[in-house]
Amino acid sequence: MSPASPLIELSGVSARAGATTILRDVDLVVNAGEAVALYGSNGAGKTTVLRILATLLPPSAGTVSVLGADLGSLERFEVRRRIGLIGHTPALYPELSIRANLQYVASVGGFDFEEVENVLATVGLAGAAGRPVEAASHGMQRRCEIARELMRLPEVLLLDEPHSALDESAVELVAHLVELVTERAGCAVVASHDRHQVDKLTDRHVMLTGGSLS
Image (cartoon, rainbow, N blue to C red; front, side, top):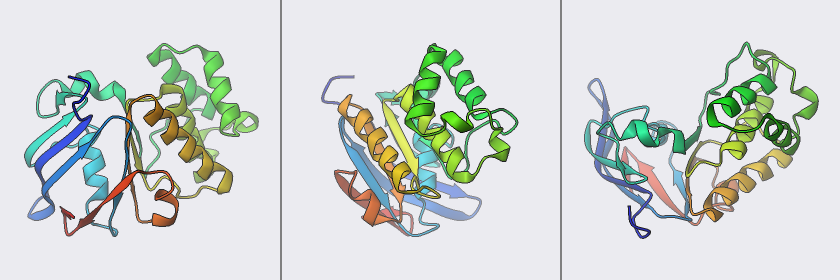
């Protein structure tokens, strides 16, 4: 991949669920250092776009390239670890503590456990680190996911309604995470209906209406 290559490129992407068309001929390019807001009403297809970019859902038609990898091929497995997703439903082990969830990520990613303690302090969870995720509030779970991505600092960051259940101090953590990723020549796509918050941390926006981008 040359330095000028887009980090994300969707061309003619469509997605269907049974007889229902969710996305229709979506084209999108996101470059290094860029944060893009993806707006649309509930059911517009925002989450589907993110799931496709995260290699969790194949498109019904079209091509998807992330970090130079064709996600329609086995290359998707090579770039998956370089993509970070914070979705609607927390991707955490509910029976494990907040700390143990992050320690697992650290062990898989080759990070020192000291970094776990650092990010716990950064997101304000040091005092609740021993709490099982299933006993933590949604806001705490979201902070834990932010901590995970602060530790990983993925090259492509995907956020789905990232401000949901967050207080003002945690909203600032989202902005900090996006800034760190883009400063390192990564990129971010932020799906939301909250333009007031998301406009502050993105460079431009695209609108999903009826499964199509405008």
